[in-house]
Image (cartoon, rainbow, N blue to C red; front, side, top):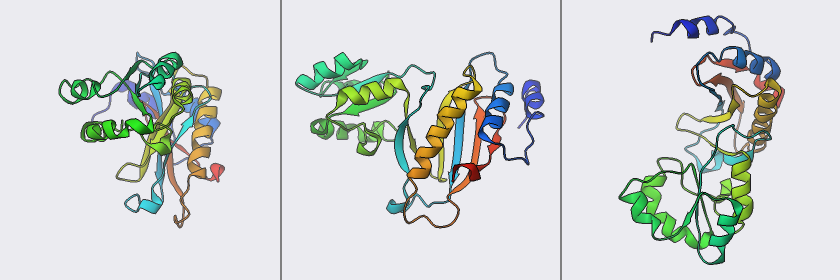
Length: 230
């Protein structure tokens, strides 16, 4: 794959053989952000688990102290007084049954996170085929299936992110924007890493944090030393 001149120059700043401390990695990530837009800083964490086994699944949610730098649009499935509660909490869209055809047939996806009250999961379940592959299905572990819609919406708006394993047992999540200070990025990243270490399955054997890398959308990967989190 041919890389652009800016990427090649930025990559020279990173020693591929070095595993950096969080602070060093975030300084480097900011220096390697050379795109004309405010790049997202992403963390990629490869775990020593096998996600094919239910008892080795790693997923959850964590509120980043400085948010993600992105405005998150929240859709809440609710009924009764929970509709008013969700609207008062700042949800972008609130509804029930009537949203099913809009999403299923019209391909409406003007939202980033879906929250549902438990009594609405029968309705939301019918959208499993379209929401599931996009990672939008509400889940009790992530706090998106709850009667406390006020807290759910407030947390998401404040910078709550979900983390889960992909098929290669890697977690990919945003930890902020290149315009954040290195300290803000470090605090967000360390909060995320703390949550992932805490979520270690009891059945996981051997090295848990195999590989930790941070990178901007268009920049080179910067390896972070996983030993500092254990």
